[in-house]
Length: 371
Image 1: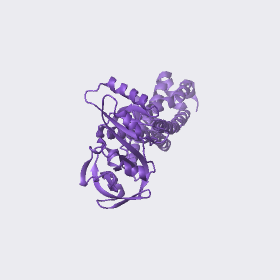
Image 2: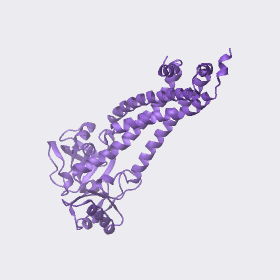
Image 3: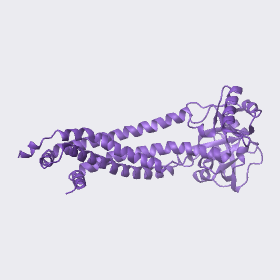
Image 4: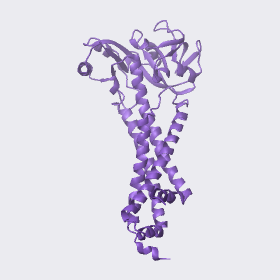
């Protein structure tokens, strides 16, 4: 009988208990995959949307909510005069419940701003001007709302007409309802107010010049923050809170798995005292017994990690197609996250097996002589 077969036999001798332990580990790892994948996907979706629009700097006033706080649109006039600024696009962005959708991105865009130019018409047309009571929908938003060209769309107290369906080149763009800035300001009773300014810099602007431009924007308008597009969301207080909660909830679920593995391994050592003492009497060193227990707990962690990754991926795919999430983000299920989750599971198994392994090393060969 080989060392590995002894390890496997130790787990299979109590299949129900081993199975329940694997369930505990897999739930914790599935939580890591799902929650962290969603938070990373949210960040990635925003960055892709900014890249699709050709935005280099985002000016906003981020608070504790997901949508930034409004500020005066006079800030845009200050920014456009600064060096290295090629173009700006003032916006009012809000997350709202729109008809059958529990949450959808609503984007009011400056009529002559560049943020309209990345939208590719799939059907219909663009609004005629910033006064037309019209809205265009990203293709995912149109599917979620079940709207076609000419249909009415109720946004708060206003009824607009869907005049176009577009492809914005990013998940966030395709999941948005897009209209002229003055219309949304009127709907939200925020006339003369915006909450985002996208800034496009002149070609050839260096990274140092871009950082200096951010400093100059804040100097010109102290009430707002200016960050490179890739850093905008990651430095948001609300996003950091969401990210921390995702990891915190995941680690709490993993802790349940730790306790499960430790309990299983302690019971295994207790039930196999005589077997371990026989192995010691046959010449096994205590260090080899310790390795055996650690290998068993590591194998538990590895199998639980594989199962957890599969459950997490399946769960997040189902969640991605729900009305509440669809069109807002594309979860990031990169190979790095999946491998990290399995490594966490193996580490959890090994750490959980340390105390049971130490207990096994205290068993003496003399116990083999007892009935």
